[in-house]
Length: 336
Image (cartoon, rainbow, N blue to C red; front, side, top):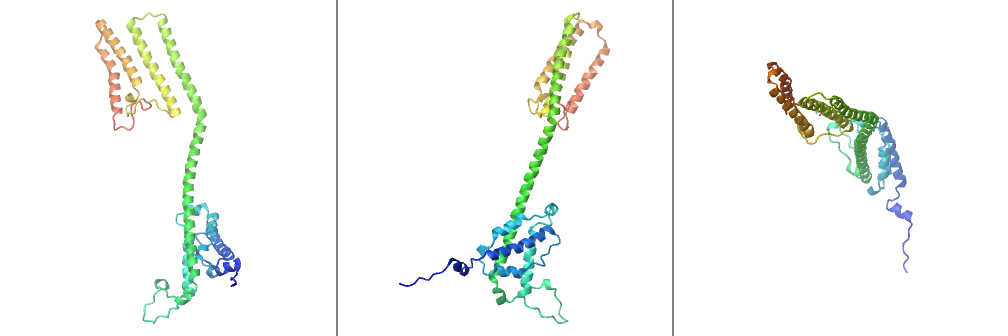
């Protein structure tokens, strides 16, 4: 029987480059130190002291799928910049990954780059940043796997920071909405007591108006010495006053409670309140009939100067038409 080849799990992990625990911890530690420096002073951080040599050594032999993504994500989410830096759109945490990546490429050029021969005095001197630096291909390919893993780490950092910024913006919006809601609720609660007192006072005024009006009419007609037409005239004028006063008080309650008395939707107050306007029309019609009746039955007492009493009516009609124009931003008796 042929002996089967035996091995241990540790040997398998070493052979397959799966023993990455210590390397992962070292990589996470490197980025944790640098990221803390960045969030502490994002405007002055330049990544100049980043140890890329140690980073590449710890990436040696590591499979790309075994990069410590969770540890790197935890570093990004657990370390925050100050509120002022976060709110500054020109800073941003994503700059960290960009700075590190740029410094890494400068490191590669420095380590694997071919020294440029000095140009002759007649040739135009080109700045270093403006030329494409040549690299030793064989030399850089020896560390191909480590460099690929480093770039994958940079891309993951960009992704984690992007997710963090998106989550921050979403939470900021939700917090603002919640704060506004709390402030509105607090304002309503603070005004609730005063509104209740106002509503009770207005209800008391309505009751006093209604019962006071009834009591007034009772007093007037208790020893009635007026003719029927005068009695009806006084009653109609009194009812108009009571109706208007009650309506104004009810409108005040509606404003305090955030409700509306409107029966219909319209820009014109008399369309929105048909009950009120119909009551006024009915009572004013009765008043007009009584006045005409008195003029017909007492022609000898009619004087041309009585026409002056029509001026207030004309004034009322003109002002009502003017303030109820569609192009106006406010309307006659806007409280209604």
